[in-house]
Amino acid sequence: MTSASRRSSAQVRPRKSTPRPRSGLLSLQFMKFVAAGGIAAAANFFSRIGFSQFMEYVPAIVCAFFVGLMTGFILMRAFVFGGGSNPVRMQVLYYVLVNLFALIQTVAISLLLARWLLPAAGVAQYAEEVAHFFGVGIPVLTSYFGHKYWSFKR
Image (tube, rainbow, N blue to C red; front, side):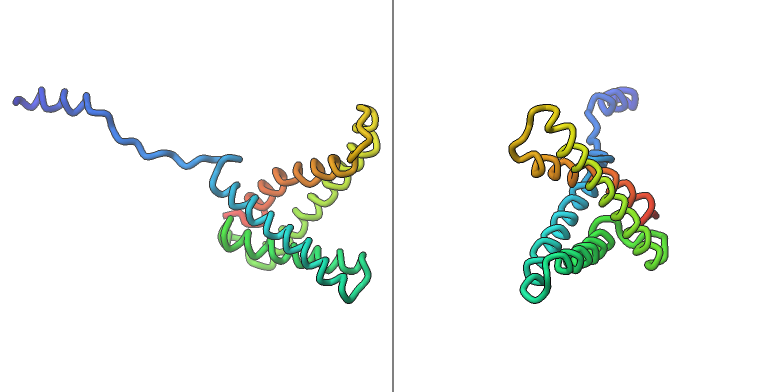
């Protein structure tokens, strides 16, 4: 076999390509973000039940919010985004700011849907539940990018 025929037969073989990591909303990192956020939300929800055993409802909600916030920060830093390049105190500050922005979005979207858009569309039953579902879901996107590029930037 000549060297020319070896080259042509090598060119015919298909190359094994390694799959490129997905980016954006289908990435493993985003899936980890959603899972960590779900765990933090569960910590928030269930700790409120525990706090309600010895304090009033509103203070229990506030305490539970901070449990969820701390749980989310620890999980995001450890399993989703890594340490990042910001000092930890700045990561905490940015993390809280991103989550406050998400809270504002949640309230605004929930109220807009529950008080105006859903009633205008004739939806009366479970309007607050549907509105809150979307109000909680939409900030997932802005929070992901806020934490990726600000709280835990590399």
